[in-house]
Length: 241
Image (cartoon, rainbow, N blue to C red; front, side):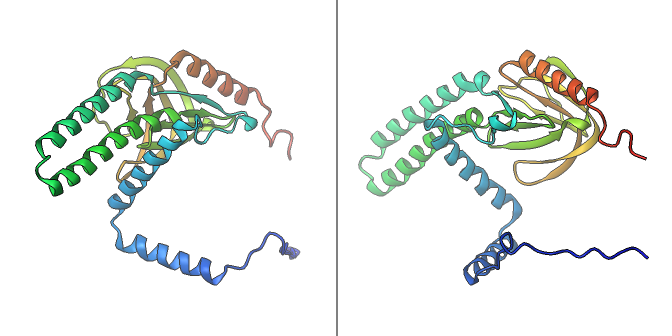
């Protein structure tokens, strides 16, 4: 017979849910049940954009733990001029609408709110790209596209990585393209599919990931180094009988 293992629970690491916590979970589950998935993901995106704007002003980066050996690789440089240009257009439009609607206080207030929020959102979208870089750790690559996409790829699944600059990205099964200013510079080929979550929550399996980096050669070399280090590392099961 297999001996039974007695498992003890450390009371210091076990917390009994409080009534407030249980009530919070109930309301959260009810809200998820009645709110469509696309709407929840859209609201989450808006929140990430606004949080990224605050992080940008504080010069902080999201999800980068340098103490754990993680390295950040930006991908926002190529879109900066476009985003600043669109923001300028939004500001000009806001000024023009305020002049046209100056004799209509209610319409003026509504349009002013929409225009100001549009400017904040436009800047926030770029801030999300700046503050949410690709992150390379010893065992995974976290690829991101601003606040829109966030995918963790274990290095154990990376079969090949190659530098190739592409300007067109036709939809294809099993391929995830994360272009910036319609450009990608690196392509990863995986041995097994990973699940990518879309902007509105749609999930699909991908085995090829195309991404953009401000310094693609640097990211490519860092990936090669990490993959080589993993290949040279002894297997944890080596020598086990």
